[in-house]
Amino acid sequence: MARRRSIMSEKLKEEIAKELGFYDVVEQEGWGGIKARDAGNMVKRAIEMANEQLGDENQTR
Image (cartoon, rainbow, N blue to C red; front, side, top):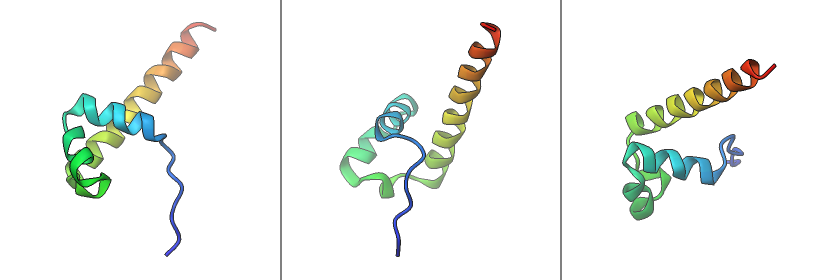
C-alpha cells in the first residue's frame, strides 16, 4: 500500500499533541496509538490555527 504524504508537518503535529495532552501516547506507541477522538481533535485544532492565521493576515491588509 502506498504511503500518503502528510499535510501537517511532524513538528506541528507534535506541538498540537502536546497542547491537547496526548503526546506521551505518541512517544510510547507512535501516531497509530492515539485514539480516533484525539486525531479528530488534532485536525480540528489545526484548522482553528489556520483560520486564526488567515484572520490575522486579513486584518493587516
